[in-house]
Image 1: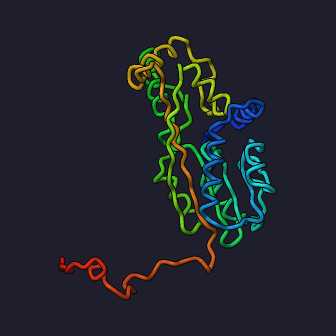
Image 2: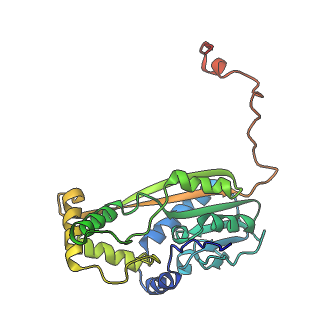
Image 3: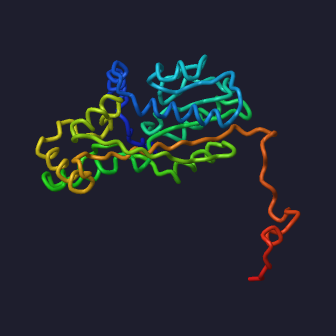
Length: 273
């Protein structure tokens, strides 16, 4: 029987080239924001980590924030040793993975018992304005659509990956940011400056016609432009947090094992169904 291979989502060669260009610029503000947020979350954990690892294509963002961390490149097979770390940070690259569950499983295997994983990635609301405007413009002028912006997962689906990977105490939440741009050209330039240009394996190789870009900007302004003529871009960053299972972690009680009734705690009468 012939084995059917799942088509790749990402052109890894193209993505690597984009990231090399981005590493030479200072336009990595979304990565800086993510690093700031992770630092705040680690403070709330109130625990010292001695063997951290960070998965990122931009080491300079993290080297001063997580001193002594092992920096690991964003590859399909991560250079992580089993049980070697008490903290793994997957830093804003998981949305490009062909197999995000496989990436989380690799991180889970690299953790010691009671080790922490924090994965940050762009969520489904990211650039929804741009995606809608481009799709409408392309449909209006070319009579069809081609992949222009990376599809991104919804938080409810992404959170389920933690449990499937065998992580305990899973939590998924998101932070939204609204960035204002003078025009579509500056928005696209920012995406390229952060290595987030179109690296889809199924992308159309020909440049997007200028008429489509003009039409897309018109649609963008009419639907989302503010009173000062600026274009807002929504950035949703999803944070996935989970712990490698350990005997010392709190466990849920068995059904029916409660020592008191909820009605008593609330001071209400319990009514039978």
